Image (cartoon, rainbow, N blue to C red):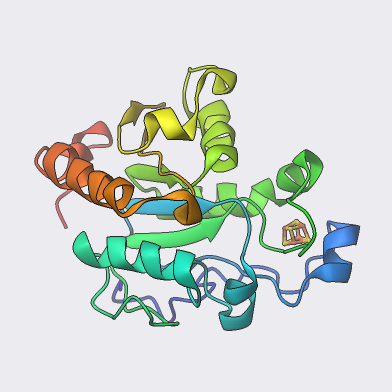
Length: 211
Ligand code: SF4
């Protein structure tokens, strides 16, 4: 954690009573804002909180999908806690969503994603990461639209899982939905990052000093 950072959970003190999306306000239990290291080089972005994340208040925790991501973070050296931790001890990674409120019966609409985008944009701007990790097709397409010159409709997360996409100011490391990953998919993502990202100076795109 950055020496000046006081908490991993919602470290930028974002609005915990946002009412931008009328329907989601009716169905959500809580708003799950981002969690992690405010100086992170890797930003992991899912579509929306799961029921378990709503319960813990921490993205990607509390269920099998969360444990899979926490395992990946552990293998990559971003967490020192167990995959079952509901308040991961995290460094150099930040976890967040396209939308921070959950409707248990449906995925967020495009309009809800647009309404929530300022929160994500603010996190990206303040953290200034090197790598964006979109988890699932919706996150991949949203980030490709904003941060690459590739037509989002031409991208599929199944085809780009465990690869690197060049972007504008960032690189994207697409990851398949956690619940859709086989163990081989998970290991392929870890291997790709270890062999093709950690092995080179991925920081040079922004000229950031080594941590
Ligand atoms: S999804 Fe985002 S914009 Fe919509 S109500 Fe929740 S926090 Fe606000």
